[in-house]
Length: 175
Ligand code: ATP
Ligand code: MG
Image (tube, rainbow, N blue to C red; front, side):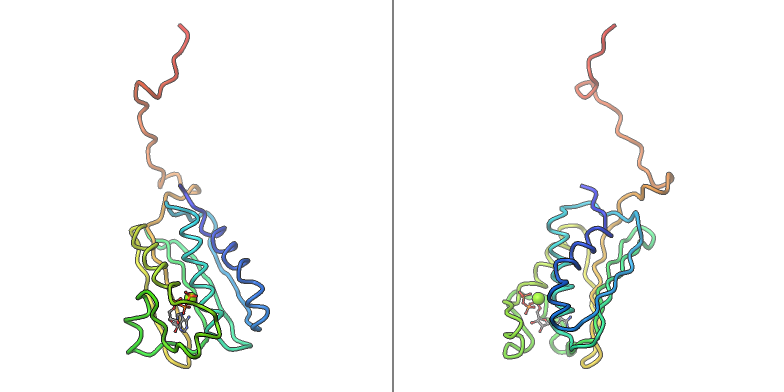
């Protein structure tokens, strides 16, 4: 299915609105219209949701989370940035492992199990995409989901030619 990225992000942010409010974190989105990826809407929503959820969970009150999406060439880049606690260089290679949590004592208060990012990685891989991460302890983190773009409906050049109908798909016509 063709999944509208702006809609995906709006839904993910909406799902986390109460958490953001409670934690005193402002979530801002900047998304281009008519950016699409091919895939499973529910899975893609779960991936974006997990990144937004983390950005809010691992940030301090009064900080900002931004979710940006844009198409760059044939890629859709969905970037979730926070000004939170960050992740050390030693831990960053392990955060995508199932059940891995940097600081279980602290992370326990977020009530998680350490599966969120392993799901993000799995969803990215199953959509021929990747996850890029940048983080600096005490400064914040940025997770970017990179996925192949589906054709943009606003640019006729990006349209693939429709498939040639096969005999079985052509409705029978009266003579
Ligand atoms: P779950 O997502 O299953 O509820 P979780 O958030 O602990 O639990 P992941 O989402 O997989 O699990 O994240 C793994 C660990 O990576 C977290 O416990 C946390 O230590 C660290 N982490 C993830 N995202 C961020 C972030 N935006 N800022 C700082 N640390 C993060
Ligand atoms: Mg998580």
